[in-house]
Image (cartoon, rainbow, N blue to C red; front, side, top):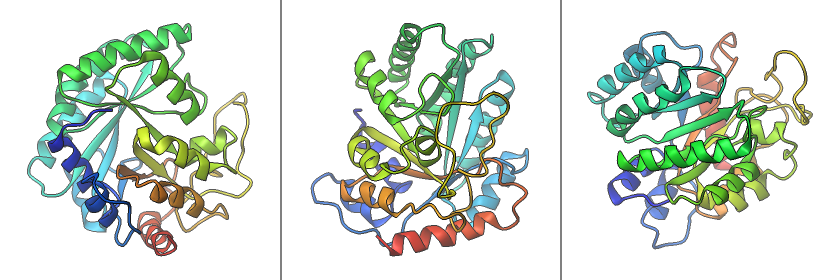
Length: 293
């Protein structure tokens, strides 16, 4: 993916701290992490964007991720954009759920584009319920071209039980579409679900060069890995605070660090709203992980 210098500098403010300051110049080899920055999803936070920003910033997070799936999400995204314009050193991202079975999906991502451009944020897309993979590729090409007109990078969001489930599948779609404005994101929880829990370091090494966002979470050592099952999906085994579960994220983080990843890192918090203090504990857990790099 081609990123202009000003966009790259913005990405570096959201990245792995001192590693980003070095690797961001793309002139020197990566160095060990000393102090990393971290973004977080706004799951289970309040309905008021300004309050969410203030709270996350007070804890020490460097940005928030919000959802943009329906027309009703557009005003909230606009409110986020208006407020962070008044806040120093804080970023907002939005992931877009594109559901081929929902009539609002074709318009939502187009309405989000100018707001994302103002946020200097990518069009970060989950795709599901497509009639065929040819329809997925056609959609992604349309999105990549439209995003480029707004000077907005496009990022594929691999997600369990959707049309693009893991980094390998996202890379395949990128190759099929063949547009330079597309990168992908890496997610420990979705790679675990896809059966890649024992090869996360290889996933990081193989895909980080065309990745611009990473999400991490604690997990159980025996978290479910396999095909989707009927009924609701429960994530409490694959999405935990960073100080919980027996799954070791160090190989994955070392894989990223070893190849000089300098993109965004986000704490995944889906379903953790009933776990008091999990944000603060995850920040401390992230510091411990960095100390082990």
